Image 1: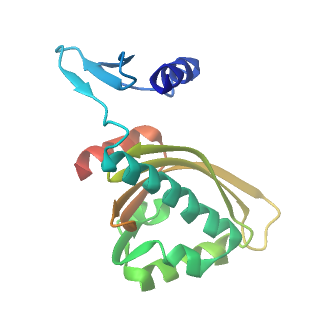
Image 2: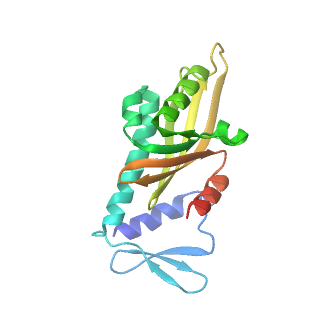
Length: 186
């Protein structure tokens, strides 16, 4: 029944936003979801008792909590989600080829972001479970420091999780670029 509901939901989505490549989702009689490729290879989804499914759903919730903490200006809650050796690659730093490392790096990014956009808000529009990775589409809204001009942008973040802690994340200007990064992380 869950698989049927998932398929109905997927069919209602804008096909331009749902890219399964050469694969198709099919509901199996046992309630699982099958991913079928053009080479007739069947790949069943994890069973509901599979701990990977539970852990990856937790990762989606953790990703949403991370961006909510930004909006609430709760640095402690945000930092609690990070591994001590985390590496982050915000969109602006990716453009110039730098990243931030460790929790001190996250603090520097946080301070830079809030000094640039003091009223920034982050809204998760979509979050996908990709096992040890999550992919989120997040709308960033805020005014530049000393400006009345509203800046609004949708960012795509790929987040890698280990033991319920973020060990890496990168931001990208498009879903396509984020999915390319997912391929590089595999």
